Length: 357
Image 1 (tube, rainbow, N blue to C red):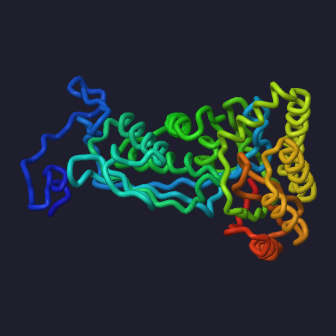
Image 2 (image 1 turned 45 degrees about the horizontal axis):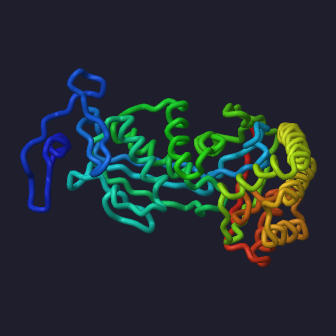
């Protein structure tokens, strides 16, 4: 069947139904469709809709500055292109929006509560582009709740796919805003760092909701190790915030040290000084451990990486579980460090390279 007819006809399992009336463009006077709660149906869509569209987004790692960034200090984060999430949006086969993930297939409105951030991303994107019912499929390579930005990457891939399906171009600010809104469902009051990093082309400096790209003087090779244990970012952030009441001097000192670490790391990143990068990472891990967000398992992985020749290693993300980053002196050193991390109990490892700018 020709593409034009595929767009103009609705189908059920027995064949074509009545031709659909072509919808007006969003914003036209006739365009009065809105997302409704309950069964997720939309009443209008861009006339440029495609039958299907696919988009990806990558994971992220906070290199230095986690937790202190929540209190207004800077942080440095980088995308991890080795770990991606792919979303595909297609015209709904049966007139109701559906969601397919690694663990669920069914109506969007029936998705389990654990998928609330994913559902929010679908609804936000569909409302923004005035989308008709869609079938949304999400395939994930990013470990969940591991500090690698899985919820933000999922939202970014979904928003991009739905916008492409509706033939709507999103500027960076709109994309980041939609991802951040979905992130609020996952983490309550996120800093916005994840939403910026998962759509960034390279490392960023992030502070108080604003970000800028960072210069990179030489390739930086990082081994990412998943401990297999999981912590709650929300709980870890709340734990650190509680120090404002119970031990404000300790919290202020940690924030000051972590802020200096971020400045030192940025300077070393620009100059390509691997030794200085490693020293900054080691200092950061010590401060995070002192704040109570590391675990014996994460500490053991850090020690294993250092014993295998890493220039510096630390937890990444909220802590309480999740992942460790280990800086390899050279790309050739990465396999031995990865082997040591797996021998020490890491569930999986990946190697990422931050390329010079």
